[in-house]
Image (cartoon, rainbow, N blue to C red; front, side, top):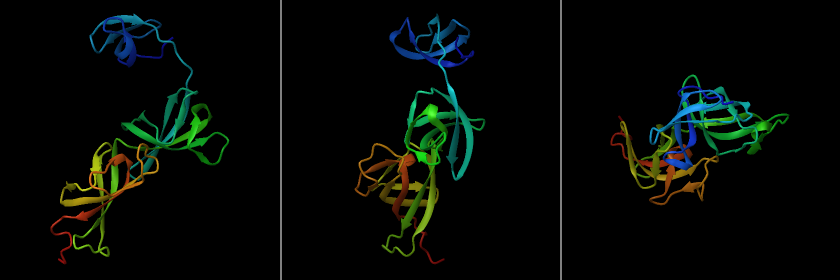
Length: 219
């Protein structure tokens, strides 16, 4: 028997428009035989979804220097590892998070990869909106008078070496990008060539030249 409710959205094959590939369907009537409507062609049909065993795991979410816990039901046979991303639904918000560490049952240390059945706690950080640390040097090349700021941007915001960014009263040209250890798909952990790009959710720190006119005024 299915655990779905009216209004839930599920991925199913549609006999009218997509018999071989799944499309998103809205559940109109729950039960043993679901009545569903295809979001692509609006075809209404009945289907059955067999329940699968699940386990509930503790999720710790880090966001903007704070952290909170929630719970997630998941397939006990699913493999999870550092760098994986998924959606968690909390009373505060629906967040996209990235795995930063795994704490296993009967184990004191953290692991980078495990089967969910063996996991006690999944440590994550929110990546849909992130704060990125920026270190800026003055245009005269002095490194003794740097200043720092934090950018709050969407996680998929593109930071690119050589480009000038403006945020409020701050303007700077990016000269270097350091990549976080939990980021995947990058050949290096530091980029400093014009055109090199790192997504904000993957950036550990940004270095740049301060273009703000009054940034280094003595007054």
